Image 1 (tube, rainbow, N blue to C red):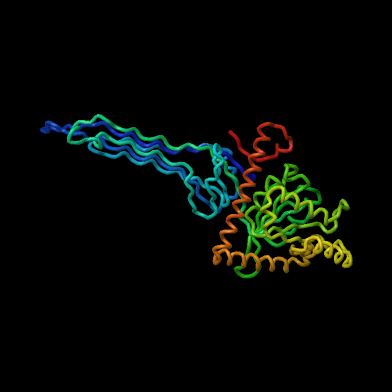
Image 2 (cartoon, rainbow, N blue to C red):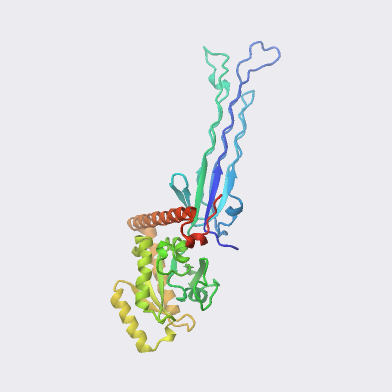
Length: 386
């Protein structure tokens, strides 16, 4: 299935039913009064989280959703039927933005969670509502109000505890394939990963966490170069960023300088990402002698004194189990603090909101470039426009 992580849809809530103009007419009743009933309320539009979905591809083929309006009132004070609500299933982690106002309407992050995105119109009033001692035969009615119409931008942000970042061919896909059931494409050329993938890492018993792999970043990614910037939103909600660095790059470049470049790109995309815990992991260490690895590790510890430094060889199964155990312990501690410490939870929510604002701004900038056709590199962006 094709991975689509942005879509634009139009939703139209139902119109309220009109009020009825009617007078009671029955045999042997000479002066029947007004009996026009009210209309029914229009139906609402909800987005509902569905854990079985992992892409927005359905919205490419069905971009418009219109809700049935409420039925008009009728005589004998009968109220019209209310319009049925429409529930649109979306993947967990979907952010909803109003295209006209750029207001973030909310996030759908739990299965079954309902987010109201368009309110149905209020019902109209029948003439029976306006009868009084001085107006016994009112001919006034009120029509139903129109339902709310909105153009919505849906942005999918994968729900994961750990996010993998790094240059192309840094070993991200190999690592996630070793520690989980995810099977991303793996090859010895750059950009083999063209779409994010999720994997569940089960450490022991019921202890597990979710890991996300995104396409590799390159220099200038924050400005639109390469593919990775299109998918950086998928690590915006992760607890830990796992920065994989090739210990011995094929092009002979300096691993330390490569790591510094990736962190600069992360900061340029959103400074909030650098406030997340970042673990630097030297990968493919089986290609280095022990002395060379020790010297490289020392350089990284001096440069990234506040970072957690680790090293692995996914193919050689070296350091992987230890790294996964440490990640599980950190994720479990984070979950506990989030549940028990209100101040910590509030700080995390504020940080997530700041990163979300940066993600939205980058999306708007790419949209402007795409509409202007000024940057050929943006042609790869997967966005549906009517």
